[in-house]
Image (tube, one colour):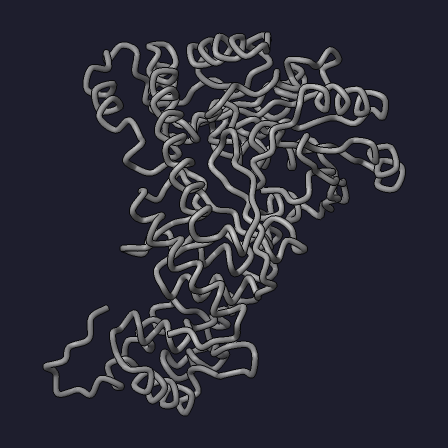
Length: 483
């Protein structure tokens, strides 16, 4: 909203009316926490004192209430003053929902990604400049109407797309029947379906620590617990699996063996065989999340766990999002036919299948060679960006951080030497127009780590961000005032 500076209505009164409108329309329901004074002042382009005056007036009217340490919230008698009747307390419904909210930092990241001018140094997706927009437009323009379907597809996904996925998988050593492939709306939906359809309340996921999965609440929302398994330069270490299985009933292993998120580690072939052997011995099923496989920059990773699996013990997840388009929302799950039947049934109950148009575009991309052609382009571009970031880190962080150069994927897992508050660093970086992914999102103990991405920001943006980031780290470490 823009305030009218030519109006006879004082600015603080305009701010007050703006917040009243948000409350009376129901957009800010009972229990809603208002943005901070600084955020309101920035978004409305006024002094903080103007916002404070408006908030004091609203508090006097009984519309909002400030709580020490809890921010300012809309309170219960709001509708009694605004609409002369008491509203439904949506806050109670929201809190009662089974699905857990994202962590506050992650919600803030999701919002800030769309702020104009923000340099996104943690984003796990390709820059728009690296997406095949023109090629996709050409596909749609020349699409034969006879092959396009705007209706629902069969439960496991379009048969032609599954045929192309099968050929794609064969090239990486996975041979599977079409009945064992389920098309899903991205890898995240695959995890949701698995959590709903295959795991009981109270089940245990054994996973790398740190792990991407700690940053989302797909499994925790269903009452499942996480147990972290140590990870080294060769990948997940399976020697403790037997102990964990005895201690935690209903266990399943989740791993990202190729260009692990967030560390970038590639599990060696030897370690993969050890993991399969140990899981087979302990009768532990494995979820293999392999969405980064095609993002190798120096050499392809070892054979997939699924390709080595001789007992049907591995559920394999793949996706087109990391190479072709995150917005296409097309991925797949490969596993034993009864398991895939179960997941397909749940998917049909949830959304009646992935987008028909997206499935057609994905099939055409695989069939025509567009996917592999674009994968080569993306690898070339990412390698240059990775090298640019490595050079910048050598220049600005060699004395205050440690890291390994990844051989693929999107990320550098940076360990800061100074012990600084990651939340404060996140907030100060955000204030300077830099969006970070602190390590605490992936492991509460990783307070000195940052997941830096070279996939989204352009080279000049990275240079600016790394320069500012060094300054912020030094100031926070030294206790100096940040201006």
